[in-house]
Amino acid sequence: MRTTNDESFKKIIAILIALVTALAAIVAFLQSDAGARDDVANRDTKNYALEALGQQVSGDARVNYDYNTAYQAWYELDLLAASAANRGDEAAADRYATLAMRCSN
Amino acid sequence: MSDAPAAKPDHWGTLVAVLIALVTVIGALVAWRASVAADSAGDADFGGLRAALNAEEARALNAVNGYEAYGAFTTYKRHNDLGNLLEEDLASADDPEALESELAEARDLAIANQSLFPNKFLNRDGTYALQRQLGELWADAKREKDVNPTPQFVEADKLRAKTNWVLIALTVLALALVFYTLVEAVGDRLKPLMFGLGSVVALAGSLAALWIEFQL
Image 1 (spheres, rainbow over the protein chains, first blue to last red):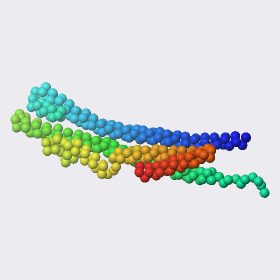
Image 2 (cartoon, chains in turn cyan, brown):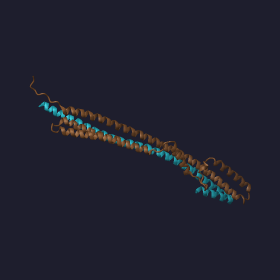
Image 3 (tube, rainbow over the protein chains, first blue to last red):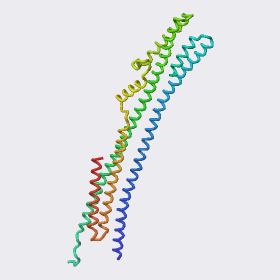
Image 4 (tube, rainbow over the protein chains, first blue to last red):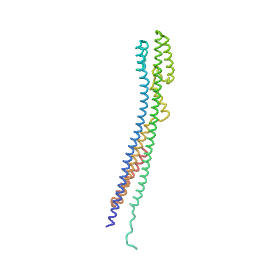
């Protein structure tokens, strides 16, 4: 009787070990899938950060041109036109106004 | 002489033990291939990020150089146009000497700025082809280094999917081990069924692993 019980217990243990092995394989798959998603998210984070940095530098270059070159030139010419008009030099005022208008185009 | 009957050789036990060992070895090989695929995915990601870094570096440098040249062109154009307007006004000027001095200064400044940007990007209508310059700089960067990360990211995603599929095949192989173990646990009548199921599942898992390895 005891031998029969021992045999049954061993069989149950063997089945449980096999089931745990199968479960472990499923868990390993799920872990790998989660790891893959993590890797993709990590990579995308770095990639987007790089893209953002590139866009920032390019944007800075553009803003630097727009403000420090184009706008400042227009502003200076506009002031020169106003000054020339104030002192009665209409020809110079026209020249600077024309240039200022070209700058704004 | 003993009267006890001779013990029957346990054919199922031996066969199942051999097959369990075989499936375990196949499982180890499949796990190795999954690991290799996962490692390659990481390498492809790294290559893609390097290309992305190259691309953004090139884009940023191109923008800085391009707008610097465009700024020099704008300054050149301003002084050149001022010179042209001064020349037009010179004929009818009351004080030509003052205008001549201003004209000479404008021309000098235009000439000084002319050398600060590449003249080949000047259009016929007197404007500056900034986009053409940026396009040419980008083409130069593409020729010098890898600036396209997309194919490597696609490859990495493909390898990651492969890893997952290989692990699914490994799970199927693990299921075969369950059936083989059950051969020893069930009664004589069900032994062939469990053995058959185990063998079918083991074969399916192995073939699936082979297909994934060579097709994905």
